[in-house]
Image (cartoon, rainbow, N blue to C red):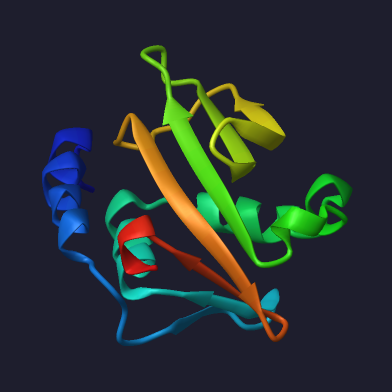
Amino acid sequence: MKTKEQKQRELQHLAEFIGNEIYYRYNPHLFPNLLLTDGVRFLAETAQCFWLLDTIALLQKHPAICNHPQLQQIQFWTLQVDENESATLRCEQDTDEVVYQEKLEWTDFPLRIQRLWVCLENKLVVIMLPTEY
C-alpha cells in the first residue's frame, strides 16, 4: 500500500492530462451511463478515491442537482481537504454558486483540493479533469 506522500508525488502527473483520447466505463452495473476520462481514471487508481466517483455518480439523482436547470450540461465539483483530514465536497453551477455541499468527517484523499467537471450529454455522464475539457 502506498503512503500519502507517494500518492501525492504520483498525482503531480495530473497536470499532464490535457484533452482526452479514451473514455472508460466506470461501473456498468451500477452506473451504466457513467464514463471517466484518462485523467480521472488515473486519479481514481492512484489516489484510491473510487468512493469520490461513486458519490458524484449517486448525487446525480439528488433533487438539488438533477432538478437544477444550470446543471444539466456541466457541473463543477470540488473536494477540499482540511488539515484535520475532514473534507467538503461541493457542486457548483459556476464559481462560488454552490448548489450542493456535503461535509465529510474523514478522508485519506492525498491532495488538499481536487476539482472535477461533470459533463452531461445524450444521457451520458462524463467525469473529467478541468484540463481535459
